[in-house]
Length: 179
Image (cartoon, rainbow, N blue to C red; front, side, top):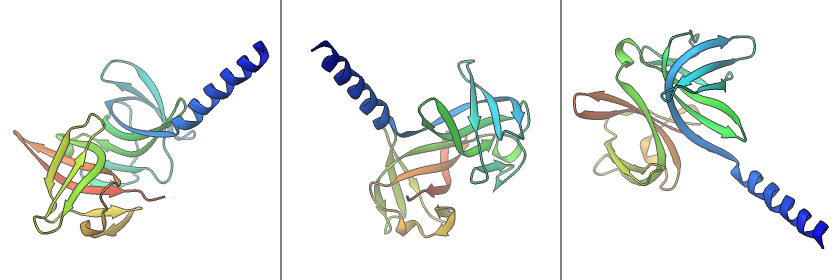
């Protein structure tokens, strides 16, 4: 009986860990060091905790307001959109906050509405807060290819590039990854 209970406990734990899957999140901090050969870097987050973050050829790096594959440098102030699988962090998007993009940030969530008549999109973040932004002249990328905002569906997960100027935040671009 004890063995069956232990096996059941192990099975439940395994199922829990397997269901964790890849969770998406955003972190803000400073790059402490970069290992170009390993394609990873140490991020010191806002709480002072060091995290190893992997990146690859699919990771978008935005430096100076331009998406691309720029090099990362120690002391870069960054905002990263990443996913975790178990204990590993993998960056999907790295925003280097300098120059024109110093006051830019990232947001993410699930699309609640996409109103093509009003030209507005609303998404709900992981804390249950709703955010509505104008989509006039906003570039949209689905699986890294340019797309129309109308092609974003309610219920899809999005990442938003945002610009803050005073007390106003505007949407710079939207990103959707469809599997």
